[in-house]
Amino acid sequence: VASRHLVGQGMRPCIFEATKTLGGAWGSGGDMPQNGKMWNGLTTNLSKHTCRFSEWPWPEDTPTFPSALDMGRYLDSYSQHFLDPSYFQYQCQVTNIESSNDSGYRVEWTDLSTSEKHAKEFGGVVVA
Image (cartoon, rainbow, N blue to C red):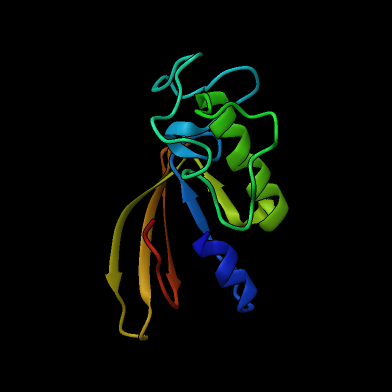
């Protein structure tokens, strides 16, 4: 949601995600969650009426308590509708954020797929 609002203000976010797919623990990769933290059949403990983005309704046929797979698909659909895929940096773990002398922030991260370390200056940082 924060990224969607940044885009609405004309900014281009760089979104770091440590996993291979969008959604962190809820991320899906097809028929079931792919992160090892969730299992097929797991449901949220909040109903779809309270666990949703105000500007993005759940599909009508979603169960009252969505499954982990439903949640992953919901997050994917939100992202596809509101955000450019190029904003995402998958398998990238942020390791350090510090103020820089240029009134911005130096962000350091490791690409988990290659173990390469990277750093870049940004004008601002949102942690979500």
